[in-house]
Each structure stands twice: as structure tokens, then as C-alpha cells.
Image 1 (cartoon, rainbow, N blue to C red):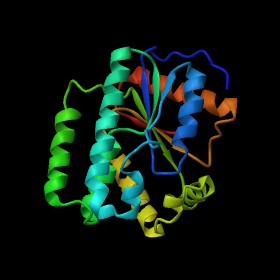
Image 2: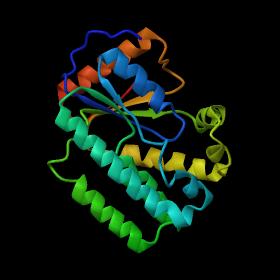
Image 3: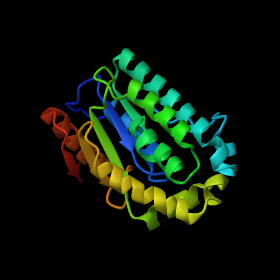
Image 4: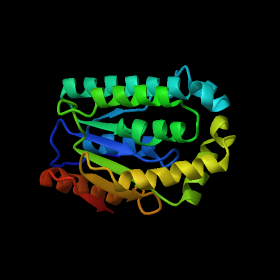
Length: 222
């Protein structure tokens, strides 16, 4: 995908959010190329806790969440200090609003560990000095479409995870995004846009320009 002219600030941070399997990494790569920005990906390879977590949620959930929080905070700080345009694969807000809360609700994280995690998150992120995204792109779709994507990419630890886990995660995302107010939100449906279609990408860029220009916490759907 070739770069197009756009009116976004050169140091913009566009962050993607959405449940597992919706195509965040693919859109991150394509949108970064389209805008002439850098891409920042979620660190999955080399994660020392991920496989252990899928084998034993209760033992490793706190360790996994602390790892993700630390890595994403370092990534956010680095991008802000560089002053360059970035498209980021997954938001730090999902760590506490979705994943840590899920682990606690399902009994995989103790109240003591959850309170420790939540306190650290608030100290690191929920303050006026933390650089918020200019726009958050929320990628969504039907649960059926998302499950097809999860199965097609062939990560065995995801395929072996019970369907009820994905169903609960999906429902939590719907609730989370409806209450998200940290920055403007652009809603995308995976069945109604195509990363390989230049017209789709131009429509997304136009919506991003409008949301950044308005500087409000509006939610817009494409």
C-alpha cells in the first residue's frame, strides 16, 4: 500500500484495540504504510509467560499482566519521546479494563494481586502526564467472524482455548468500548472494510483526520 497525503499531525499516535483475532496487526502494518508512520506491535514472540499462561491461567495470569503492562508502558513512553507518527497494535487501556479484570472475575487472579496491578496501572497511566492516543481505532465484528480468523491463523494455544473464554472476552470488549472516554474512537467492522483496498484505507484516513481535528472524545462508526 503506497503512502497517501493526509492532514494528521506528524507526531500522531493512532492506537488499535479489539479482541484477539480481529486483525489488529494487519491493519497496523497497512495503516502505518499508508500514513508514512512507524508501526508498533504487541510483543508476543519472546513473551516468557504466554505459553505457561495458556496451560495454567491461575498460576500465571498476574505475571502475564504485569509483563504486558510494563512492555506497553515502555513502548508508549518511547514513542512519545521520539516525536514521530505511530500506529500502535493494541492499547494499554485494554490491559486493565479487559484482561486483568477478566482474570480477577474468573478467579485466576487473587484480590491482592488484582489490587496491586490496578494500583500500578493508575499510577503509570491514569494521570495527566501520560501520552494518550490521538485516536483509538476499535476493530469489531461478529463473534463468528472473529472465531474463523482465530482458527485460520493456527496458533495452537488459541485453538485449544475453550469457546466460552472467547465468548466472554468478546462480551467484555463490547462493554469496555461503550464506556471508553480517554480519546476519540473510530469503530471499524471487519466485515465492512478491506486493508488491501485503497478506497477503504482512504476512508479510514479521512475519518482519522476528522476526529483529530475535532479534538473531542467522540465515537464514530464506519
